[in-house]
Length: 543
Ligand code: TEU
Image 1 (tube, protein in one colour):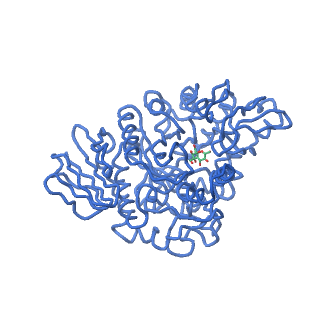
Image 2 (spheres, helix red, strand yellow):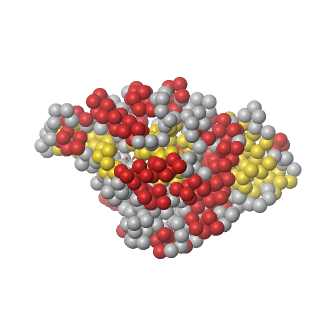
Image 3 (cartoon, protein in one colour):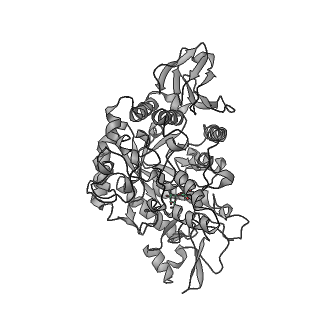
């Protein structure tokens, strides 16, 4: 991809721990990714974002980095990584690394030196004499007392993930140098973990809430990102995506506007909180469809012509979308395709999370023993202490746990879904005998080929990249219809988000339009009245 046409490309996210272990280990490896590159080339993606494979104690599956320059032995070696970069490039695929620099592991040499009171490194982290009432995103207070120095360090995530002090210029220089090391290896992109949390308000006030307003999109964030851009990205063929926690549209416009020279695009998460009653995650609840359309439409309109959205339904922190916004029992295939159509018709860069392209589902684990995730286990313990029943917590976890998307990739119908010949670190979803890559590749009507077609449409029709967005059905309880338009081309996407049949009056100009994506055979169109079957989704195209 040249710097000018990266906006037409699609990114595939790999969670290597659960992707493939040719070695027969409990966890996947870098060689496992290399072994499956032909499959990804067949799908048609141009970038792989691989979640962290750096040396790490793995308390948060690699988001606790103890050496930014080394590969964790469980994933292989630096030679394996170099081989992956080369082999991917040979197939026209660029590798994006995940950069985790809001915090490091407390096992990182910098933190160890900081702890020991080393003159240079003490200030690489955030030490205070008094804690505040800020909360960790994984539960509990965000400050940890260190007896030796009598001070507290900040950890917005796990206690073993200490927040780095971005006010320290030397620390920032060390981070940029590390990023240049990866860039110079031929890495073609960076995904920046919770990057909008790096600038903390230096007064460190008490809060009437969890503290996030004092560090989300903080005072120096745009300055830091401009500096990072100058120091690492500018003039190089790399794309960048910032993971923006609890951000605003205005900030994301600035982060991703080409004029601002910060990042290529941003992930935001408001659309994935439509099943959080009163903002609370660990409560089982249905999703609010009207709100989902409203939030995504607001971001489509607000970023158009200014910034650039990373668009996605799934990642390693979210449940599987077909279980969440679709129907993973009676209409798994139709609803997985419907969700894909709605997303890939939008403006932005689509991200496909491993297994989404074959319609993988939540595994439905009922027992707490089957869960591994630190956020899930912390939430269970905290909520139980607060008096929530075991049953209510398990219902919430079954629906919301991050482990829902972390079960092994389902390659075939052999034991452990062909992920490993050993015993996987987390159980495989029981439906792997039906839902797997081998079956999908053999079936021309599979979810896989539906994604493949959508990816190719993005190359074919400029309107999918450039067109403006208009929501046609803000109030409909079951239909999401929207148009994308440029001066030369128009697209209409119509989707029934539910099982019962429904109808929709399409704009008159589209009655003769070409159907370029569909999850049933022939549209049921009578004049302008379109009858929609369960989870039916159609993309019409005209010039
Ligand atoms: O996640 C950022 C983040 O804000 C998470 O707390 C997210 O809100 C949560 O997982 C949803 O339940 C990133 C990574 O994607 C995640 O895997 C890491 O655990 C986290 O940062 C810390 O590095």
